[in-house]
Length: 169
Image (cartoon, rainbow, N blue to C red):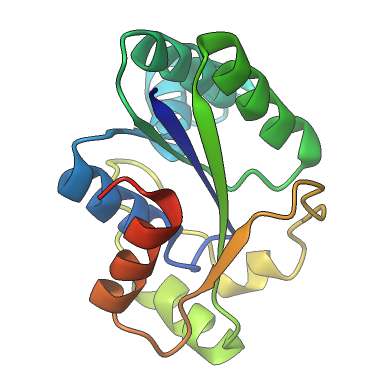
C-alpha cells in the first residue's frame, strides 16, 4: 500500500532538507509546495496571490502518484488544520496510508541562523526572514503527529529517525 508522508513545520525547521533527503533515499515522490507556489508567481507575476493554489496542485499530484502506487513525501508548512485535513482526505481517497510528521527546531537561535543563511533552491523564491517568523500562524495538529526536533542534530541523524518513523526504509 502506498504511503503519504506529510511533513509539516515552520520555515527553518529543516523540513524541506529532510523531505528531499527522504525522497532521495527511498524513491518516494517529493512534492514541495514552495515550488508550486513560486511557479505560479513566476507565471503570473511576483504580486500574484497564490492563495491555496499551490496546495491544491500538491493534493492533485499526490493523489495521482498514490493511485499509481508510489509513496509521496508532501513538503509544506501545513500551518492550519484545514491543509492537513486535505492531505488526510487525499490519502484516504487514494487508498494510501498516511504518516504525519511535524519537524521543528526548538533552538530559536539556530532557526534564525538557518533562515539568514539558507538558499531556498527555488529560482525567484525569497527566503523567509527571521522577523517574518514572529507573525507566523500555527494551529495545533489534532492528529498528534510524530515530532522530530532538529535542534543541534546532524541531518544524517534526523534522516535516520525519519526513516524509522515513516517505515519507508
